[in-house]
Length: 404
Image (tube, rainbow, N blue to C red):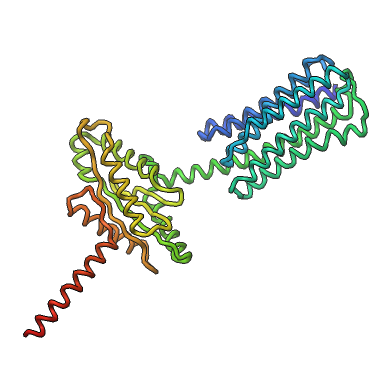
């Protein structure tokens, strides 16, 4: 009776963890890998229950158990890898499963001894988790929680590869009829409970950390465009500028403004205007690199910080965005109506503050507006033109002074 009760501890704990991940996934609108954690624990719980409740000597019991265990393990490994931004090679995992299943079928047909079966299936799981570890090691994520997950996966792989052989050294043969009364069965219940709790605690911690990060980032995002809001963008610039200057890298600021936007709201309504803003923000997000930073800093005004980029390439980026936006159709506007945007570009100078850099880019934007809109103006080119014009004017003044 005591063995029966202890045998239910692991599956009940797994079901609790499965429900926990399902609730977090739904409440936090988390990514699908969180739901994957819950499904993996649920499948493991079913596998525990099949082992514990069905006849131990029935030929189908062992195979049913391994189907649920294997599905749970694969989904768990794939979900952990997906969280790290890596993709598990499912073809290789499927090959390991097929080979394990075939060898297991042969072992079941040849002998009533559970020992060889346990070694076969646990070796298969160990190889699967080792593949998961190798996939995780290719990720660039190395936060403390990521290292904890890798450590748990290494522990899982090691346990599957080592534990069955060590246990069976003390218990030479285990007939299927007495499997639930064996030392191995008592030990496996304890080990699986410890592994389940350790695995769940680490993954719940990682999920809560991801949830917290998501909430923090959402508070820094403009809800309409998905870009950084003004405060978050300015804070980012105050961090990027000193870093660029310390590393000797160029940092170019692009300031953009949708032309005649007030008329869009007045004629077609604010809903159409919001749609245009959202499309412009989406377009910017698609066309910049991962190392660049974009934000909506006003009603129809946007900024892009282009990392490690001089004014010329930054100007060409602005031109690509300008052309793409000019060709977009917008919901709520007439089919023949196209919107345009004007751009100002400035590259940070040594020791320049964000306020000064923004002022120069904004002045270039004003020049673009006064030059007919739907164009890009580069503050560096303007400055060069002004210097050249000044150099032309100086000899004229000198000649006048001499003639006088």
